[in-house]
Length: 428
Image (cartoon, rainbow, N blue to C red; front, side):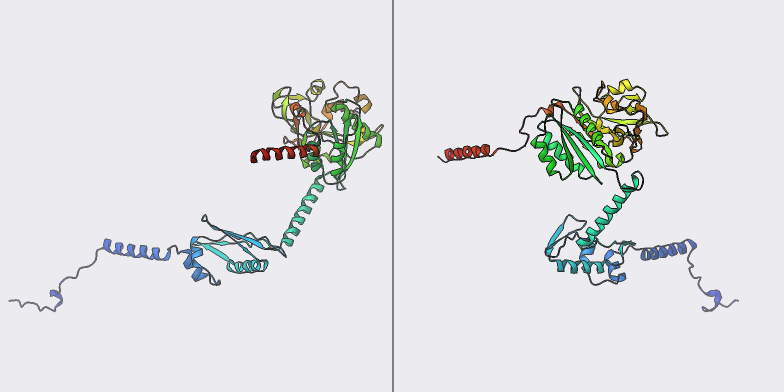
């Protein structure tokens, strides 16, 4: 007979429940997920600023909205400065402080934003604000202007000083004469280097044009051409004056109905004899309103092969008969003044003498100055970007208004008396 085993013997011990393998992996997976969430949690910007940046105390609520952009400061020695602070919200706060307070404000914020700024988990380096001293800003602008001027000088022909610019402007009496010449004078004042402005009128010199020239602060030559002369004959009169006085430089045709870019004068410095640049035509052409570009056309080697005379018309350079009838704009041509001199060695054989040009049949075309249109130099790298614009509109020339563009004093007094009489009648 077998005796029962005692309760404490190994054979009688109850079997313990062992965890299954899938359950163990599930517990470990949950533990790893919780750890990843804790380690990779995206801390708020407020916690990062408070824990990691060694900065002076700041307003935490301001950083909960967004980082504040640097204010714009305008300060002077005896004036107040306006500081405008803008956040990502639609609120804009503007305060006015004194110069001393502005400097203190700027120094304080320089200290606050010293070092990287954290956006989420990413550090962003914030650039310092522009110098608060207006004098230093002016010095920086002067340095930039000097650099740009040096770049323009280096792009000109050679390394010497720029050649003088001779701007030729034929003008006729109209309501737009004074405004057009005034606008043109402001453009010519932007030219770097010496400039001579030749303005030619028909018959006699008027006081209106003389007043514009005197106020332009430019060196000018006011000429009177033949009576009832056309614009083409007035232009030739100016060219003959250049030949007579043997003026040296580059000739630019600045018609009063034109708009010139300053880059035109830089390209004119590169001309050796006669050159062409792109010019835009705006307004009416033979009763049709249109806008198009006239420009020299070049081959792959940069050699001139023709002219774009309109938007859809390209004429070859050897068709001089068609080119002379195509109404090319004088604003799109520049030339060396020496080719106009009588007996000058600088004048090529394909450039006509002015005495022969005067009797030419197509005096309106600038190609009347040459015998071979294919020898003209394409300037501006033969680019198709306009350096000048010509406005064609005969209707604007017919506008009736006093050429001085002002009311006479008696007219003003009469209008005042009339207005007083009207007010008296209204009072009764």
